[in-house]
Length: 231
Image 1: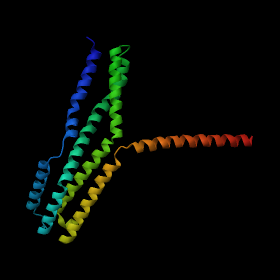
Image 2: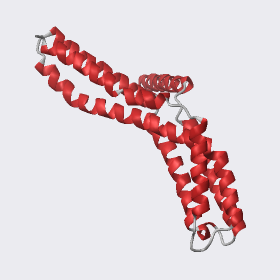
Image 3: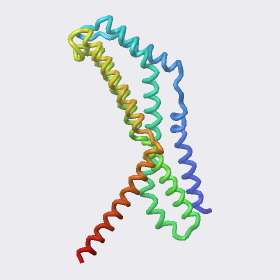
Image 4: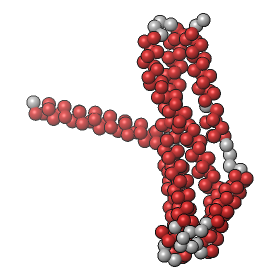
């Protein structure tokens, strides 16, 4: 039995099998039921809130209406964070051990063709994962969506538990709450758009590299000419 060949197929099977949770997270879509359930839970939480300083009925109504409008956005943030989180840890799980395995396997396989195939498969798969992780900015997107979701719910709980922390009177509290909500939404939107991989970025990087080479070449030519003049 060729153990190297068996190891290759086991590696491929494990890689495919462990990718299923990532695929499910990426394929999951927001449903009307998800949004309605989230809004219903929020309304119930707002109705039950009993802060020490009291909570004005106007504030409760504004929070309920605001959350109802944001429910779809919050679910989107939640699903996107779950998707990028699954992809991020999948990449870490397979790339970190590979950094240790590849040098060891390279020495162990000797001249075995099937052993060389195993090393090639692991190396290629690791390179693909690293390219996707960097190109799609998986970690940055995960942090952006997760941070935005967490920040909003922190603000939501602070308004229910300590409304006085956001202002002295109901109007000031409502204004502060809505302004903070807008700020969080803007933060997540900027994080999402700034972390998108585009062809323009690749072109700019390539252009920058070529420009740097031209400048270095030009500088070297000018220096050479100056030396010749001095001589």
